[in-house]
Image 1 (cartoon, helix red, strand yellow):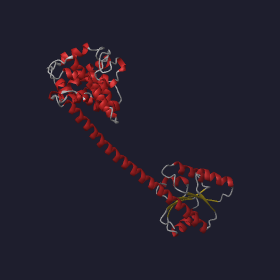
Image 2: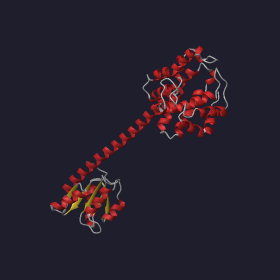
Image 3: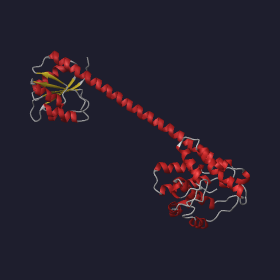
Image 4: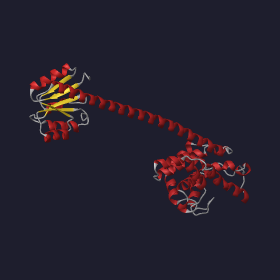
Length: 352
């Protein structure tokens, strides 16, 4: 037998409340009485385990009271027994439609009252068990989701770190380009963000752009580090680094690797179709490749290389303007130049 339940008795007849209170307290329950439905609604909350309500009451009848209880999220699950003299089928159907769970007919039979009360309290106990289980399940799911997110975050950081080390390996032979990949990624991220690309794409470009020259790992040092101008054969060998990098990165399944493959393969294509490796032109060149082309050339112009000293910002900008519409996508170059102050700030923060 379930004991220690909190029961609300609603009846406009005080002696009915006293009768129910005496009997229910003998069963071990706590009883609160309300002389009408309005008072009952004022004191009702989720702590009650059962409601016993009369039907015919002044101010508000039992049907309306039950509907209001059911429409309140806090009290909607509390079982309700209608204590009534109603015997017509239509009246009982109306009570069920309003949300009543059970009926006791006046005059009260104490055996029936005990049976129906215990039945409703068991129903409430089962409902509470389900709610507690759902709450525990929800908490567990949230906790496991957070743990998964943290694990994925750690994995993602490790993945990004690996990308940066892998990219640095391709640049390692030339100590003057130590910060090149950081600057180039910063410029690329700035352009993508200022162009209004979605956050995910901007993040992918930032993380993947350092791999743009990963294919140089397959270029002989005698060509890669040659201080003078490359001859025609050497130049053709040098150009293969775009395809080498793309092929290497295409072996990966992550979004970073896929984006890196696109950038590696296309960052030497030119707007007018004179670039390599495929001679793509205009919007045939994937957008990440066009963005990184601008970033890569600016950093190359303003940095020391085995074959040249760094150009000034002014001269580098002048050279790039000459390539507007031939080497570079005009819109992307304009975005880059419109944000030159931020570009310079990135450069100053990541000097070799």
